[in-house]
Structures are given as C-alpha cells and as structure tokens.
Length: 274
Image 1 (cartoon, rainbow, N blue to C red):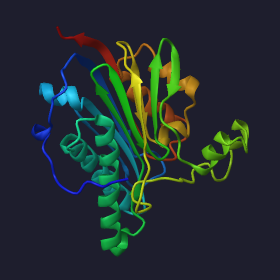
Image 2 (tube, helix red, strand yellow):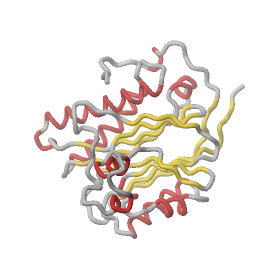
Image 3 (spheres, rainbow, N blue to C red):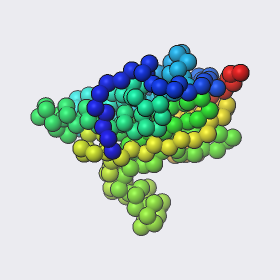
Image 4 (spheres, rainbow, N blue to C red):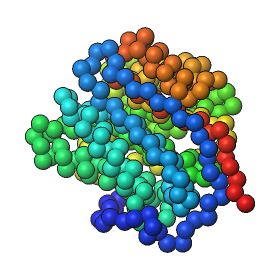
C-alpha cells in the first residue's frame, strides 16, 4: 500500500463532491482507567466539520485507540495514532474517502513505528485503531486491532469491525468454534496493530447510513466484561451520554480489568439538501 509522501490540504481536492445529505448526530463519550491499571492507555477523538466541502468528502470523524507497550508507551501510541489519523485523513489528496482512510491508517502506523524505533523506552509502542466516518448517507469504517465498532439498528446489534486476533482468525477459518474462542488463552493476541509492522493492511468498509442508527465505538475493556446482549440492552433507548456512562459502569462493575472507553454516536436525522 502506498504511503503518504506529501502534505495536502482539503482545499486542493479537485472536482468537489456535491453535498446531498448532512448527518445530524448526538454524541456521548466516556473513558475510565479501570480497576486494575495504573494509567489510561485508551484515547478517543472526534471531529465534526461545518465546512460543506469537508462534510461532502470526509464527513464526521470518530476514533478510538487502545494503546499497548507498558508504562506510558501505550498512551503515547494512542495519542499519536488518533491525531495522525484525523489529520492525514482530512488532508489527503484523494477525493475518495476510502482511499484517504486507508492512507491515514498507514500514516498513523508510520508515525507510531518511527517513535517506537527512535526511543528505546518505547520500543514496544503500539495501539489498535477504530475509526468511523459518517459521510452524507454512508458510514465508513477504518479499523485495525480488537477494539470494536458496533451498530444498533431496529433493535439489533451488528459488529461492523473485524477483530484482528489470532483466535478470531481461527474462528473465521472454521478451525475453532465460538465457545472455545471465548476462553482461549490467545484470545487477546493481535495479528494486526498500529506500530507493530512496517506495512499494515486495515479493514476499510462502507455501509449504508440511516436516520436512527446508533454506533458504539469501544476498546476491549468494555467487551471483555460486556456481552452483546448487555450492550444492546444498555444502549437502547438511552441518550448517547447515558449509554456511554452505563456501558462503562457495567464493565467496571463486572471486573474493570482494563481501561474502558466508549463513544456513542446517534444519527438523529439525515438532512437532505435540495
């Protein structure tokens, strides 16, 4: 995959895409250190533009990263990855958001990898990255690792992100079953992560977007202690802020073995422009 080799501005994009829909959203977020960790290595960011051209080409951006590496390394990796992803995605030269999103993951990987190589104390620097972009009437996912992007629609919960772990790859290949995977000793062993390898292949997928959709972006500190039934139960009918707080509280009550971060995005309306 080609890396970004120069800095671009959104204003340089040619043949601007017409703005047909504006997603009107409500957002709630909550992060917690958990009950067994000394520092919080999770990070979330979001960027909601008002400029019509950015809305048309890039949309609303929400990112969750879960850092790893020990000491402060994970926190630094997550911080670098979130900010680099958003900046690179917004400023990439391509008009196509999928191309820009894939390149932004590559850029985040390069920055984290460079810092890890240049500072001995941070040689194990790395993180997951889960990004959701709401672009007109589409939802775009860019993802690496085992954090999750979930969608609530019509009383059903769907996982939009693939988990890049050894165990999940074995499940997808039919080697082990779901019940075995839940308690497997390698269930947290990542096969892809920001900062782990020189090259990286993110999941980049586009989905149809509808008014009423609710998205949950979360680190595995939530899903380690909260199953899909409880996520659906706690997030349904609650405001995004209420849902985020309820979900984090549930994970803490159930053990809180890791940092917990939840971002909830509810699509209140898709405003159609004439």
